[in-house]
Image 1 (cartoon, rainbow, N blue to C red):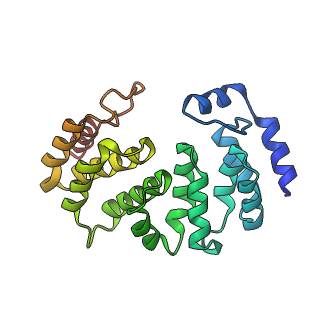
Image 2 (cartoon, rainbow, N blue to C red):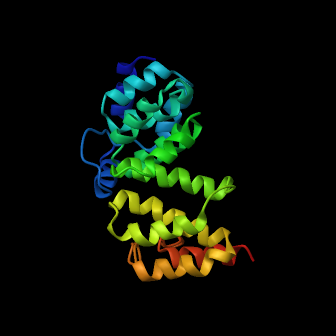
Amino acid sequence: MTLGEVLQQLEVLGSDKVREHNSKFGFVGNQFGVKMGDIRAIAKAIKTDHELGLALWKSGNLDARFVGTLILKPKLLTADEVEQLVDDATFSHLADWLNTNVIKLHPEKENLRIRWMQSTEEMRSRAGWSLTTERVIKNPDGMDLKGLLDRIELEMATAPRNAQWTMNYCLAEIGIRYPEHRERAIAIGERLGIFRDYPTSKGCTSPFAPIWIAEMVSRQG
């Protein structure tokens, strides 16, 4: 499948409703407004095509970039190329897809995590905290959880909004998974109050860390 053919398919599948949804959540730019299920179906038909994935990303179209994250080969990207993708993905939903489908599968992700945890660039910091949270969940050996809580307490209030989101995720996961740090994690969340008033749909858990921690811990029985 060619770049032109994918873009043509995406354009046909676009809808006002999805465009409005993306705009509501902060996207400004070139988009068709394609449902995520249709994005996945197109990517599934293509399977893996690294060069096409790069071309879709370079098109600048949001929907094309979503497809690109699913068909790129992470191992073929240099660390600098991954960093450029992170800088490009300023829409949080796209950043999440990039993180899940590309960054977390890259062989240099730990080196990138360490680099990004010291970055002042908003999307790099966001990605660094996301990778750090993955380690907190899956591979905590060698992680200084107290030190992470220190940084969150000191930095989250003034961090850019995109970085706040993944810092808050890290705060919540430390509180959920490590009882010895739970009381402090909840106290930090309460004191900072970040996402306290975040609109939450019925049946969903609030991203406000104290509520999130309490809900997840209660589910553990």
